[in-house]
Length: 442
Image 1 (cartoon, rainbow, N blue to C red):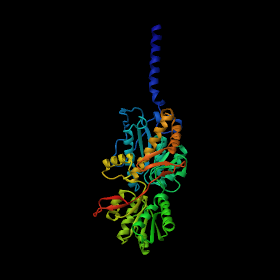
Image 2 (tube, rainbow, N blue to C red):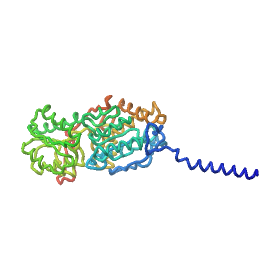
Image 3 (cartoon, helix red, strand yellow):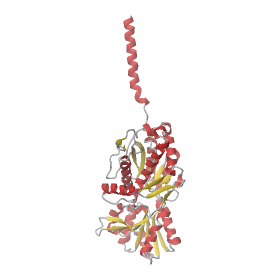
Image 4 (cartoon, rainbow, N blue to C red):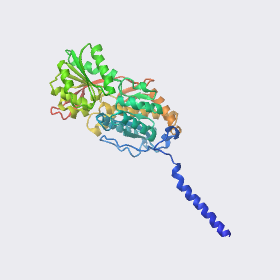
């Protein structure tokens, strides 16, 4: 009898152990959803659930935890997830792909220099495509699924007006790399930008056009009426034309960013015989508009807005891109150490000079990394729950000062960038129209 009872007890113990092993996965951390505020300290323990593969070329590996070193010692620990929500598809990808490259270079650059005090960062890319719905989906995924500490993005101001309120409600810091429309920092206290407002930058291109040709009197303006940034930018351009430089605004023509035929608008504008044409649109539509202006006989100066500020416009308008003036918030000739290193890294990967959109994306990631480093010295990140980390990171971002490829920048308490230097560049194309470059106007 005793032997039977003993064997029965062994069987019960064995079954209990098997049941315990089988139930273990149900107690693990769910990284595919749920409230980030209720998930403890993801920055210390939670690995991102997914990493979307960036579409741009020259991509360093982003799916594996990058090795970080401090003083030659390899760091350990989970990487810190930072979201990057930019357009990798749609007609806006001509801009977003440049941002992907800039962010990737930043990830590699800062991880090679110790990451965040010895702990690597990991960028989680989400494609916003070119509309508001894509940006909203990307932000929600980064905030709720990937549990990022901050987001760099989106590409368009119009997307920011739709998606930033989601981050604001979740109390997630956002660094806008290319949102220059009026009202972006005013969306909320967690929204800041490294992209100077159009009202500060754009008029410089009109001044450069007048410096080159003081006889300019009549100006025609084109803008994409379905894009929030273009609508904001054209207001700045029109005020500069009439109020600042006292020129004659002879016509204002509207189009859609999805348009490919601009014959009607160009015909109307040419009838007014403008000396200067100013375009606010995106790379694909803006490039096609430039081409059709030239094809239909316009020979005067063209000023492009920030949406045309990319080498990806070259294949669109070819040789007819030549001579376009575009105001710049970045110069690859900026003389500081970090720009020299960024410029060298970019040229090594892309075999050309870095554009503004890449530099601003790099600067956005840099601001997050340097703010994390500073915060970690006073409040160790591993001790903070995600909600606390996001909140304190936002405060640290706004009170910091940063030496970036854009030059020295800081932020107002509202999240607006303080930047000291701006530029104007002119596109110079080879005669056959296959290659071009941005040459800075002295």
